[in-house]
Structures are given as C-alpha cells and as structure tokens.
Amino acid sequence: MASKTGKILVVDDNASIRQTLKLLLPLHFAQVETLPSPSTLIATVGTFKPDVVLLDMNFKTEVNTGNEGLYWTRELKEIAPQIEIVLFTAYADIELAVEGMKRGAFDFIVKPWDNAKLVSVLTAACNKAAQNAGGGSSRQAKKAPAEARAAKAGGDMFWGTSPAMEQIRRTVEKIAPTDATVLITGENGTGKDVMARQIHALSARADKPMVAVDAGAIPETLFESELFGHVKGAFTDAHTDHEGRFEQANGGTLFLDEVGNLPLHLQAKLLRAIQSRSIVRVGGTQPVAVDIRLICATNMNLEQLVAEGHFREDLYYRINTVHIELPPLRNRASDIIPLAERFLADNTVKYHRPLTGIDESARQMLTNHRWNGNIRELQNCIEKAVIMSEGTTLTASDLQLNVSQRTEEIHLTGRYDEEDEEQLVRQAVSQCRGNVSAAAKMLNVSRPTLYAKMKKYGL
Image (tube, rainbow, N blue to C red):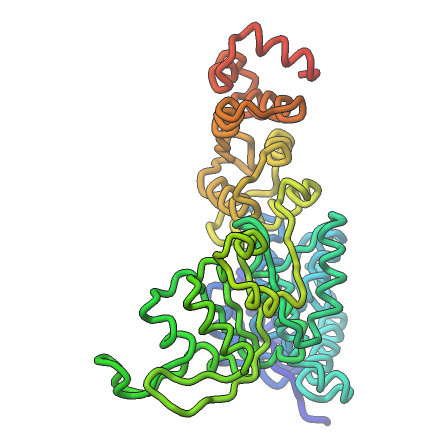
C-alpha cells in the first residue's frame, strides 16, 4: 500500500464534524489537525504548514452569510498562496461558491458530504499544493514569487468597472513588469499606496522588498539618515551603522509617498541619489550602489509647484516617467456599492456582527454621498456603521452620514446645480427617514420649500 501524503487542516466550529473528520481523514492523508475557529488559523498555518485547509464558511450562531469563509480565504491566500483551500458549508449557494473560487478557493464541499467525494477533492487539492511548492512546470516555478505577491496585492486592489480605472489597469499591466519610474497622483484616500503595492506585486521585483516612506513626515534633520543611512559615530546617537531606506529597498521597490511636501534643499539630495543610483551614508565617504525601482505619490499638483518654483523641474521629470492619476470616488459611482459590500464583509468578521447586507435606503445614501475623503472615507464609514448597527442589514441611519456638511459647503460657496440639489434633498430625506421637518432643518430651508423640492424630484 502506498504511503500516505498530504497535510490537512480542518477549521470547523462543529465538534462532531471535527471528530468525524479526525477519524476519516487520517486513513487517507499523512497528517490531520483541527481547529474550532479561525482565531488561531494564521498561527497554526505557520507552525503546522498544511497543504490544504478545509475551511468552514460560518462560525457564528445564526449567521450563514459565508462572509467569514470568504474573509479567511482571502487572508490565507495573502500570507500563504501555495496552500489550497476547500470551502465547507451546509448551504449550497452557487453564487457563494463562485465568489469563493474568485478569491482563490480550490473547490467547494456542501454538508452533509459524501466521504468518497470529500477525499477525492482533498487529494486533488493536495496534488495542486505539491505543484505550487515546486512540482509544477518551470514556468510556474519561475513565476511563483511574483504571482504570490500579485495575489497579496490583489486582495487589496479593487479595480471596479469605471472606464477611468479600466484604462489605468491596462496601463499598470504594461508598465508593472518594467523598471520605469512611476508617479501616482490623486486626492487623499484614493488608494495611491495600494496602487504602488499592486505595481510592485506585478513586477519582476515582486520577491524583493517594497519599502514605503512618507517623505513629507520625515523631519528635515533626519532626512538623510532615514533615506541614506549613517555610519557609527556620525552623530551623537549613532551607536551603530544604519541602513537607510534606499539600501533596505535594494533589489526591490522604494515607494516615496507625499513627495510633493519635500522642501527644495532636500529635493536636491533626493535627485542626486536617483540620478546616480547610489547613496553616501551620513558620516561616510564611500558611495554605495543601490538597485531600486522608484514609485512616488502625491496629492499635490506638481506641475503647478514647478511653475511656482516650489518643486524642482529636473526632479519632476526624473520621477514622472509614467504618470497615473487615480480618479476620486465621486467619479466612479458604479464602484461605491461593490466597495461598500467588500468593507462590510471584512468588518462583519472583524467585529463579529451578523450583518447580511445593505438595505436600499443605505445603498441610495451611499451612492448619493460626495465622498470627499474617497475610498478611505467610505471604508471608515462602513466600519463605524458595522460597529453601531443593531440589525441584520445596514440601514441609512447606521451610516450616520452628515449631509449638512455638504449643504454648508454649497451655501458658503454659492456653487450648486440641480444635480447637487437633488442629491442633497434625497440624502436629507433618506437620512431623516422621511421626517420632513427634520430634513428641512438639516438643509436649512422651510418645510414648504422642501415639499416643493421633493415634488420636483419625485420624492
């Protein structure tokens, strides 16, 4: 009889299921471990090193949304893409199965299960895991590190369906495998750091480090030491040699965020290092060669800063080989609800809430909101709503969006159009749950005026 191979980790909150599988699976596989919940899943994966995780999709009483299974599937694929995941659920939901496969699951088993089918699926998953570990084609082996990082970045990156993001995606696919320097611009909260990680993950440097630096937050007196390092004795507290961020990123990617905040004299030091691809540590004399791919980001208009003399023109052109401008969330309205649902799934697991979706009033409010803080504001909004919610679906009142802020902005600037006005009226009426007096007070208009506006917009 052939020797048994394969290590299976079962994660299920049902004690009788764990006991049954603890008896069945060792007849077919070399090692089997079980967990009653995913709370220690990541640590167990690190010590047990399974080939396959058989993962239940629900761990909370009376919750059967599958959000937990989808969440942990993504988490596992981020930290250990070589492990195969088989999802385990009592609810035969084909849409859930498809979503699980999209997030990297190998297959989907419905309870109650057929023993022969379960063993067959787990065996196939073990074989696939063996290929992932080095038994596949030379092409697979060669691309494994990059694909692992790409999978990790893919867990964060949401492309959506807007034409602007589709164009950016095509650009990223073209330039990511190269060493071209990239400048990412866009408003705060649009995901510039996530985009930088995506580019690195799809590059030939994906198995090397990506070092991120908030350039605008480094005190001027520490700038050279932070970026270029220092030698022992270079200054009072320099007790040992120290590698700067350029050296830490050697072979990989250096991401300089908020580069527009650098003062001119520090821009000159940065330019020299980028041009020469070498640095000299503070207190040192010998240049140290560095091999980096540079990605910069800013929410500022660098062309305007150049024209005003606040940003070096030669540095601007040096970091701007490829320019990617991320659109604000208000310009990709079709992506608001899918993003909100993604954040909902993550936070229901994080805060152990039995939420199954977003009701229509909340969807309308989310779609109509301006999102001046972009994706970050939406993420924070959904997280707070999950924490404060008391039902099984998110409602408009859970969101706690303050339409009066937008109203004040319009009153102060005097700039508005019918689209702005309709959004404000709809948001106020929805947030106040149809209470006209409260909505009129929020909008700072009379009740008759609000009634007229509601009639105008069909409310």
